Image (cartoon, rainbow, N blue to C red):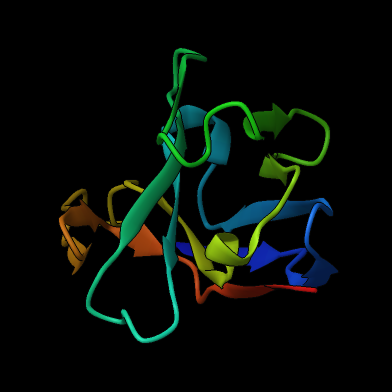
Length: 131
């Protein structure tokens, strides 16, 4: 079974930094594009795109993330990391990573978070930014 596990969340003061990691089980994360998404408090039906690392190495960052966040692969650990700098209260959310590997039978049964569909989502990691 394919799984993703996020780690690195926690509480941080405004202006602080965190590094979130996404680890895959059951498939090789390096073979797939990986997205980071977040759900803010009280907006459980909304899934906001944060950053994407494509399989060709190109990246995309949403407007709130651009200039403050970076996304990269750790080739040694096989993870995809989201480095977040200069965090503000608006960054408080549960952060999820997602990828689109096929199941063992070759099919892709996707689940949705807001506008986005992937076969595999992590359970989320909480980031809380406060004064």
